Every structure is written in structure tokens, then in C-alpha cells.
Image (cartoon, rainbow, N blue to C red; front, side):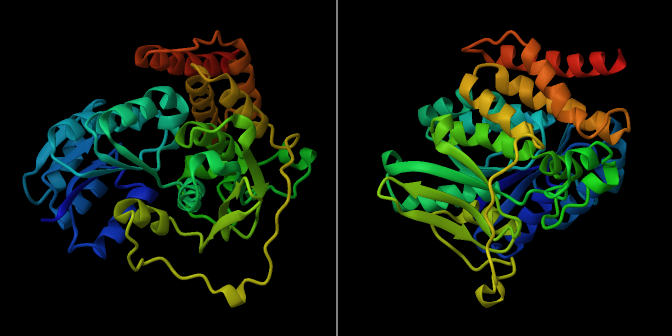
Length: 383
């Protein structure tokens, strides 16, 4: 029998790449659920093509558009809890969690609670609730396989040794479009400039996070929970070619790296087929055309988000929820023209400093911290 998969965030870049991968795995996988935020028409087009049993839409305002464009009658879930409800009621073997931001947390937690395989592209779920998510996975037997290219690379390299043999991991970063810009130049960065990534094609929020290097800061926190590492075991290296997707250093001095073209279909497929590998639709790396691989240390003065990410990884508790929420709110204000580019990290740091951390939070306390941080960013911007 075919394995059953649901895709959370099917109209985003991760979701579209996942469907492309699944086109090549039709003999093994069946799409049984598709979920989106507010793109009702696009979700309907996907549903008409893949004919899943259910579709979910978080934004009720797009419900009419979705239903008017469906050519058949799947189960339709609509509203803020629609994604979690679909996960709860549709039988599946694997969930591809590609929702950007905190919106996918409840559905991801439910998939883990059910003991399913989770192909996790939503790094925010671990940043916010890693202290809940990973113990829950151990309890239920859920398998969490990272889809982030960097964490997938680490996951793959770690297969060569035991967890206690790992000395250090290194998350590679392209450096984004402003890798060589001066501090003065960065003060005037526009939204269009921030959305022009040199090597990766991603959604707008993730692209801006890459430009501020906030994505790497979030990945430090994610790696701390995902691989059960101390923060001082997690390093960041600037690698503008985006060929080496991350490195693992073992206790004997050996380094293992995963190389490939910058294409999210490779880690998505690996998460679906692990521990087996299949031919992938992503273009292959031409090693003879790869003339050089550059590695540089990051500049934490120009990219202070990295310093914040390490601090959050060290402190734990509700800091991850506040860190993620403050950044999300600041990015939205930057995109609307309300906030300057460099103020994204500044506002995030200020909100973190004002936060009274809870060391061992419940889910409700994490969600409260998330709401508080968003309100703080907007309140202080309005002052």
C-alpha cells in the first residue's frame, strides 16, 4: 500500500517543492491532505490536481475562493485551528511541515503527539517549543527529520558516528545579499534589496531572515534541540557558494560535510524516503565546475542576530518564543515600510532584554510569550 502524506504549507516554496518531489514518488506516496494559509485559489488548483481527501485553510476570508474553485468535494477545514484539525482527523504516515512562522506549531505538535514521521521545515516549531517537542517525540516514537538544508546535512553526516562522538557542528550560511556591505551601507537597505537573495529561492519572510542572518540565529536554537547539543558545540561559517550545506566535526578530528546544489527538493526527498535514497528531480552538482569553496567567520557586529541566537540557545525557556515572535513582527513592519532593516535585530534584542523568562514553560505560556513579544514590537514602534 502507498504511504500517506499531508503537506502543511502546500502553496509556499517548501510545499511546492514537496509536491514536485512526490510527483516522482507516485508509486510509493499518496497525497491525502493539503493545507495553506490564505491562498485559497492556489490551494484549490493543487487539490484539483492531487485530489487529496482533505484541504485546510487558516484564513476564513479565503474560504469562498477555495470552495468556488474546487472541482470535487474533499473535506474542508477552515479557520485558525484548521491545520491542526486536519492533522488530527486525516490518517497519514508523514507530515511535511512547511508553514513559515509560529502558525504551524499546533499542527506540528499534534503530528508528533500522534507518533508520525515529521519532515520538518518549520524551524520556528523547535525554536519556540523545542523543550516540549523533542521529549514528546521520544515518548510517542515520532521521527523528526529536518528539511532545512543545513540541518538535513548535519542529520546525514551524523549517520557516520554516534551522538557522543560529535565534537562540533558548523551551520553554513551564504551570507545573504549584504555579506560585503559596510555598516553604513546596511542602514539604508530597502525591502527589494533584502528580497534579492544571491543563491536561494525562498519565500519573502525566510529571504529577509537570510539577509539579516536571523535565519542562522534561529537555526542555532533549532540545532540545540534537534541534535541535543550544547550551544558552544554549534558554530556558523559563511560559505557564499552554498555548495557545502553544513559540516560535522567528530572527536577524532574528522570532518564530514554534505555537498549539493542549492535546491530544497533534495532534503525534502531525503526526509520522505529516509533511510533509503531515491533519484531526485533536483539538478546534480558538477564537481568539476566547482572551482573553489570559500569559508569565512561571520561578522557578529554587522549581523547581531547571530549573537542573539546563541544567547537564546543558552537560556532556553520562553526565550525562543519571544525571539521568534519579535523577529516575525519586526520583519512584517520592515516589509510594510514602518521599520528600517537594521532595526529588525535591534527591536528583537530590546524585546528579549525586557522579557521575564519562564524556565520550564507550558505550551500556553509559550503562546502567551509569543503574543507578548509581538505586542511589544508593535507598541514600541508606534511610540
